[in-house]
Length: 169
Image 1 (cartoon, rainbow, N blue to C red):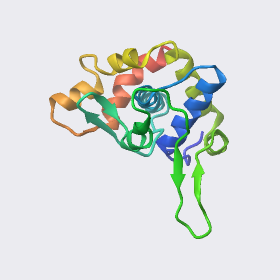
Image 2: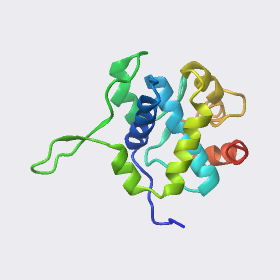
Image 3: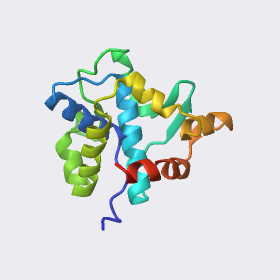
């Protein structure tokens, strides 16, 4: 059991999915990357009872959003993301560096990588619009947060929502 593994930066998880897409000859747009990371976070909460990502998921008007991913990829608009997320490290002697797949693979247990691969398998056939529609179903964490006027979607609500779907995949 990997109890000391902390939540990862959502940008590193996004890059993992972007690498999977590139390897598979597919592209992902900014809306799609939001959903892949959101679903992976939900599955991890449901199956491992701990957050996958360090960032909060917010209930924006058009769906669940991870703010760091939004600002990182908004320059691509509705088009495919053609560059990975980058991290700005301001320590002396450093420059802007990429969150790489290898950084994530060395930071998390194999079970987490298997979970990410499974999320990719399950959701890869869907378009970004279809993925978005999945997050807007009645009773979803996003719809519940919006109905109650919450700006942030509670991880406990996400965990409980994904317990059944994640366990059955």
